[in-house]
Length: 216
Image 1 (cartoon, rainbow, N blue to C red):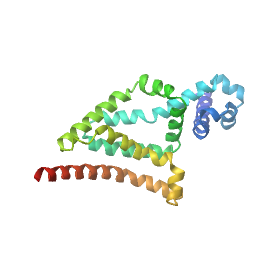
Image 2 (cartoon, helix red, strand yellow):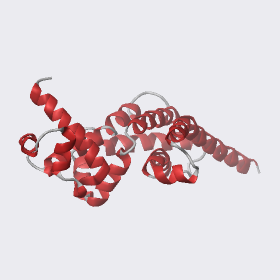
Image 3 (cartoon, rainbow, N blue to C red):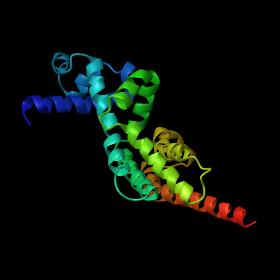
Image 4 (cartoon, rainbow, N blue to C red):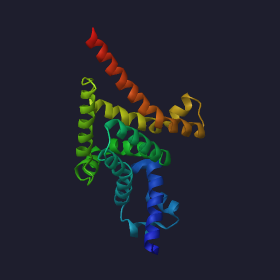
């Protein structure tokens, strides 16, 4: 890595931290320059505007999500096995990047069209197509288990919410349960087992109810 590449990497690292803390509107280029230990003129040399720098940071944030989810969903194995892999992968990633969900959600609310253009329409990973295929696979497994009344789309949205919500609402979760940072991390690690088990028990219970109704 040459000097220019090292400087650009340092700028991006500083920008990621500041943008995730403050969001686009509240961030000043001077804040990023100070954090990267460079002057503002040099910052503008590498990234001509705050919008261009933010676009790079937002692309980085999105790329933390989709390559992993595409690799897991497109792989071999049952939908149930893929759910276990998704939960572990994303909890690991979010424990390393706890501000990421709040940052993405905030920017979606601020500029929905930008999110759709970046993430859905021009994303080379084609997340909508991949996720739709996985949801269809999950629905087929539900049908085989005799619980076709469960909507796989609802299950998928619930799965993502169960993974992401504690990080978005981290201060509230820590406050409600009087957790320090270490205890919160332990709780998040435990969810790698808890969430797949909850889904398995839900599907098992639904199937048993269906069998009981059929035997009456």
